[in-house]
Amino acid sequence: MDHPVHLHINPFQVISRDGRPEAQRRWKDMVLMKAGEEVRIRVTFRDFLGRTFYHFHNLDHENLEMMGMLQIDTPTG
Image 1 (spheres, rainbow, N blue to C red):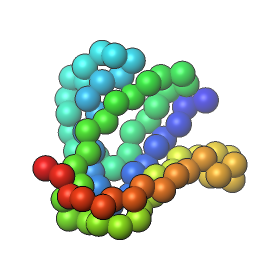
Image 2: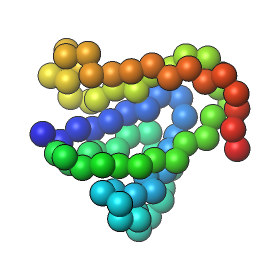
Image 3: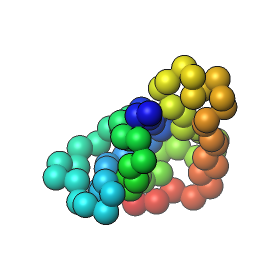
Image 4: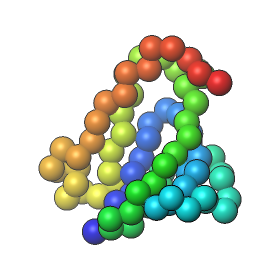
């Protein structure tokens, strides 16, 4: 099943999919991951310190608690 993954607060760039460089690195807050796909992202934590979370924009996945917390202690970039 495909997974639309959403990261709160901080935009990111997709840098590769399954080891292949992403052609266009646009800033976004969600990426669609195909079933079995590995996606690498680049994100900077500049304007927000504290707790935020990521989750899947798929109700079945959210109901299965497929989400996680990020603790941002030090700004980057």
